[in-house]
Picture 1 (cartoon, rainbow, N blue to C red):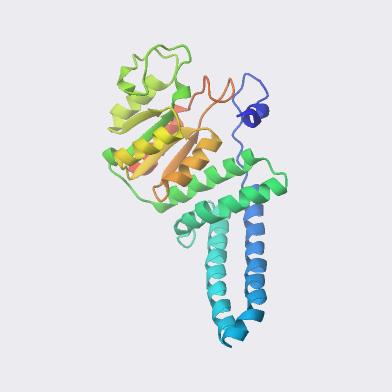
Picture 2: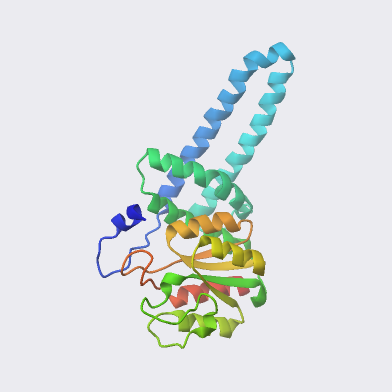
Length: 264
C-alpha cells in the first residue's frame, strides 16, 4: 500500500492508465531468450551424469526439454504477433494460460531486476489480457456473467451498505453505484461489490459464472485474473482522483463495452 500511494502525485486527476505494449514485448522477448539458454543448460549439465545411467537418457531428457521449450517459444511468438497485430493470430488466445501462469511471474521478476515499474507491467498485462479475451470470440448469456466492483467505488461518506446487497443503493448520484445497478438491470447481469480479493473469489466460487467483468486497480486486477483463470476476465481500471482505495470511480461506458464484448 505504501509503495502504491507513493506513486500517486496528489493531483486532482486520476492516476493515468497508460499501457505500453513495448514494455510487454521487450520482457516477453527477454523471457524467450532465457527459455532457450535455460533449456540448453538443463540439458547439457545433467547429460554428463545421465549417460552413466543409460546412454539414451541424455537424448530422452533433451527431447523432453526441447518440446517444453518449443511450446513456450510458440506461445511467446503467438502472443507477440497478436500484440503487434492487435488481433488474434494463430489462436493466440489459447496461450493465455502460458502468459498468466508462466510469463507474467517471470516478467515481474525480470522487471524488478531491470527496475521497470511494476505498475507499467501490470497495465501492459491487463491490456494484453483484455485483447486475448476479446479475441476468443466467445459469447455468454447475461445470467452467466458476473460484474465485480471494489467497495472503494462507493461514496466515502455513504451510510448505506451495498457490499451485502447492491440493491440497497438509493441512486443519489454521488458515486457510480446507481449507474452500475442500472447496467445490471438493463442487461440482466449480476452485480457484486466486493470488500477484498478473498470475498471476490468466494463470490466467483458461489456464482460459478462463465465470464467476469472486473473493476479495480492494477494490482488487484492482475491477481484477480490469475486467480480466476481459466475464466475469461475483461478488466477495467478504476479512476483514482484521491489515490488508492478511497473515493475511486469508473467509466460506465468502459463497463458497458466490456459487457457487450461478452454478449455479442
